[in-house]
Amino acid sequence: MTERQIENIKKTIKFYRARLAAEKRMFGDYDDSPGLRYIIPELYLKIRDYKGAMVYFRWFSKAFPDDTGFPVFNLLWSAAFFENNRIPQAIQKAYETAFSNTYLLDLINGKDPVQLDKSETIGFENLEYAKQVYKDCIKLITLEFQIWISNLSEYDDFKANLNKFISIQKLIKDEPVGPMRSGLIQVSNKFERQLTGRIINFP
Figure 1 (tube, rainbow, N blue to C red):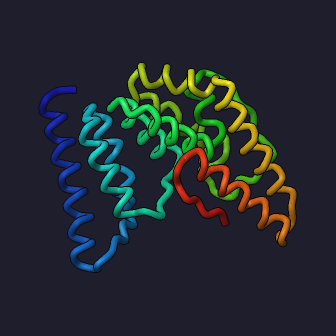
Figure 2 (figure 1 turned 45 degrees about the vertical axis):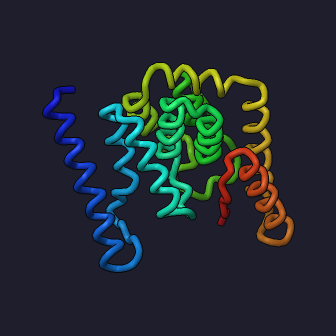
């Protein structure tokens, strides 16, 4: 990437952040229907500005405390932590990535996962979504991070926790609406919170 391209991306980041700030000043809150807040981290990682990415993610967590993002966003957040040598936080975001899409890390690891019969109520939770985005993800992350998160996904504890999550989602899928299903969702919520540090509300 040339210096001119890098400067153009920096200008785009500045422009998008200014638009979000103007929205907040004008309306007292963020609407962001174009989803600029999700595009900005991709731009930081394109130019390998990991410190800038961390500053942005800290702002994001304060500005959108209830926004759990989506698989690619969480993966890039994990990458930013990793590149800044904040490994415990990178692991938390790796879990959040895996919980938001159970197939993405396998694809990054060169595996060929199959569609699972489990609760997938949001479009980005399924295998088709993961297949659509994983190659773009690889372009945005370093080889070092790709190797690290691939190795992490092979650790016994990580695999056991992900399998437990999948088992709960299978039970949720097969349980009709009622107290039992609500209880399973609460169990899933608590389990995710323990590993990610985020409070996640399921539909």
